Length: 202
Image (cartoon, rainbow, N blue to C red; front, side, top):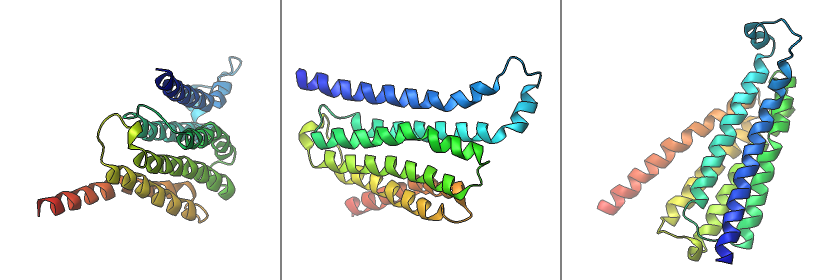
């Protein structure tokens, strides 16, 4: 019971940190709502459109990373010290994300160093969950239900490979557009699933 309670605290703490990080993203936008200003929302949006764009982008990033975290932890009944520290690294990247988000907004999204830092922060998050997948696959005793370890690790490996490519492309004029390569993750995993299914049938 004590072991289970410790795992629940770990998951609940992670969810709370993610919620705080998502809340921090909106604070720069709240500062724009100055009661003394007579500008309409359209005027504010035109003047600070990059800040709105950065907020939406980072909120989507945090949401997708939370889904990845949920995928890893949803079938677990316990944890290992290694998994706890990996989760700590993942949380660190999530909490840090509002900082490069602010830099992107201030530089109008055209500063290469800000874009690189932004993609690097996401890379830490994605790779951390891949390492978590590997740890879970090597400790089946902490898994509540049967799971396909090969598929679990493969999903994380595909995401990690793509984010590293995006990180390399972030140094080019593509900047933040390099993140679009992450959209290939689902088709690649779907193709791999079809090949695995076909192989099993044969």
